[in-house]
Image (cartoon, rainbow, N blue to C red; front, side):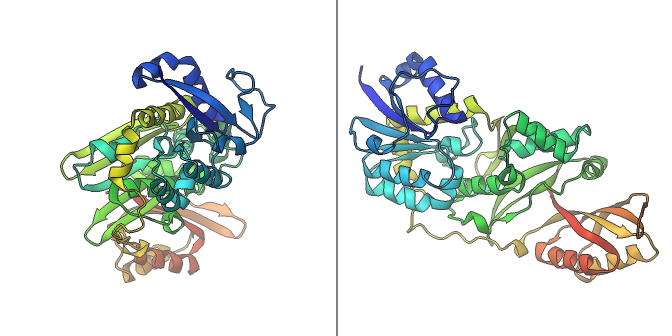
Length: 433
């Protein structure tokens, strides 16, 4: 049986999972590929920490340089994360004639065009199923099974950490801070969870989905983003009264005017399947012009679910399926036609606002007046009993709007926050139509 040698860069959580699958299920993989897959080298800066996998002596190294030259290593798997040295390693692998598998969404979101142009230049491929939604084969579905469709929209929960935190808060048992600590304890959140809770991770994944689903090359830093840091237990209570749950949604919607992209905490109707996705699970709802709505759900994080996607890419690469898909899709191609991207001011939809306001006559009139001047009508409103503060009483208002232009909404929020009746910043979320 022919042997295919691979190199693994990064023996962290996911890298260890890949090593486990290759070790424990080598027979299964050989039957699937008709070849023997051999882990020839593992590169990691940390050679002392004990991992939950047994590797043959001499397999690990902290020096990447000798891995690039040997022609008998034909595939490099990058599981380091971040931008550097991951970018340099991937480029070196491609230039030395090796195919690449990566789970690095940040790298693809920021340097996708450079990496894919390099792969095409040297006749190599890049597979990246694990970069979005862990064990859910959503990239494979978009690149193969759904190619007969013109996509109309993608609505997705793509960050398991944030979904876990929101699920715990919705239960009413823990605060935001305690939910973050629980996520860290379970390994869902990093010591610094900023990229998860502020929506950065979800935005990077959304730009990859936009490339696959719509052919749009987007600078992820320009995508409208609201994180979950300001979500409070009071928001869940009000959402429940209206028949909604709160989810951090990554959304892409195609229209004649252009592609709408945003990540935001969103009130989702409880009868929508995506509202019932809890804990660290991910979900993607796609609408195509031929297939209609299609729903994918599964574990979006964790060692073995993500490693499963990496090894799936490895099998496809060995069998040559990746090459067929890679060449057919022409992803991140510099001469692809530009896809118009909507400005956030052009978004049209419903909104949820939570306002701390002074408790005195005329407040409602002032708020409705500012909204009304900008053509924003109120769909519902709830007022909490006033609380005593050092500088007087204040009350909390929860309101939802009818559909409105986001540019008008942002202007209204600015005017309200500058007024004498609103205390502090207004919390804003989207309401899914």
